[in-house]
Amino acid sequence: MSFSKIANSIGASATLKLNAEAGRMRAAGQPVIHLGGGEPKSKAPQSAIEAGIEMLRSGEIRYTPASGTLAMKDAIINYTANYYGRQVERANVIASAGAKQAIMVALMALVDPGDEVVYPVPYWVSYPEMVRLAGGNPVAVYAADGSFQPTVQEMIDAFGPRTKAVLLNSPNNPSGRVFDRDFLTGLMEHCQQQGVFLLMDDIYHRLVFDGRIPVPCYDCTDLSVDDANLLVLNGVSKQYAMTGFRIGWAVGPRDLIKVMSNIQSHQSGNPCSLSQQAAVAALEGAQGSVSRLGQELENNRDELVSLLREIPGLNVNSPEGTFYCFCNFSAFDENSTRLAAFLLEKVQVVTVPGIEFGMEGFLRLSYCGDIEDVREGVRRIKWILDEAGSNELKVGDTVFTR
Ligand SMILES: Cc1ncc(COP(=O)(O)O)c(C=O)c1O
Image (cartoon, rainbow, N blue to C red; front, side, top):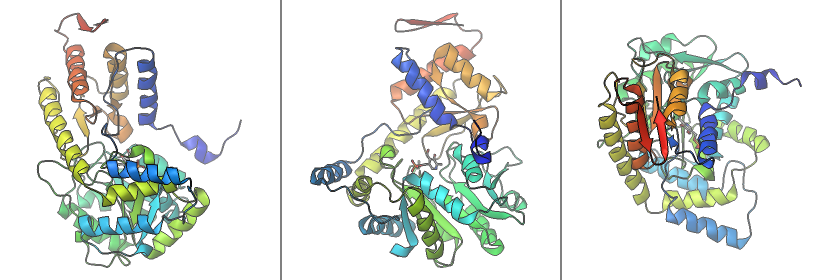
């Protein structure tokens, strides 16, 4: 069978593949520990559940405007006013099927074949593929000092005549890094000067730790929402534990939002009406679930980091937000794909190879699941990586051998 060039250039999402593999192993009764996941285990907010049930009961589940219902847009406007300090209008807002679709339609709106989109390393696994899907060329920027944040100069050195956009994600998947104000302001200034769009992926927005407040990216420009080359992306998936509802959004200049809406109207139509109803209720209802989730993740982060730091040779950065810890395991194996496969085979722990995020030698460990799973996963990793340890490790009825 012959497929398009685009189809042939796209691989399956590494994280979704791992989820499927972990599911298969669990179904076969194996005591697999999944530290590769990307969704909080908590329940959706009660307000969202009730709003969804009410709409379902009505039996009136209809098309909505392609860019979202008025109630959805108003909830996004309120969120933007509350957490970014910017008053925007309905024309500045589009709701999509997850932040993923919002990013994708933004790229399709901005990128011509052969144009470039720049992003820092480590990056979210989907960015390179999404840029390719839009016909563009991905340009990954490494920090010369090996850190998780290139300098502004390193970023703009990667700009060329075909650069159309920069994709930034903060708090960052996979590093947990929260980019600082100077970095965002410096980058925004250069984007504006050079006619490049800054796509700010804030999907983990308020999941930050140690009393941090995420820098509202609108603080990084004096220009109006319609004049700034800034598109802010967010959604209910992570903060509200509503991954399956598939509601995300973008806020930006009305001209860009208009063409994104045109594209979306032909691509998928509107985001699911039932999910919009639930998302509005989550955004406008009590916000306790977000702060509880943040606190729980911070506790998990503390425990994971302290357990990992007991493993000699491991270089552990403490994440500032999200629910991922990106660790340098190169003292054990430079090849992260091989190491992740080894951990899965030997001790049935799922991790994500750093190479999928552009950094070899690292593994991403998630701490969004049960703390018991986090403890057990690290116990097994510690055991298998310690060559001087015992020959066997007993887990319930299963015995792992070296
Ligand atoms: C950095 C980043 N951006 C966007 C998304 C997509 O979010 P959504 O579920 O809203 O499509 C994810 C999901 O894992 C992510 O990690």
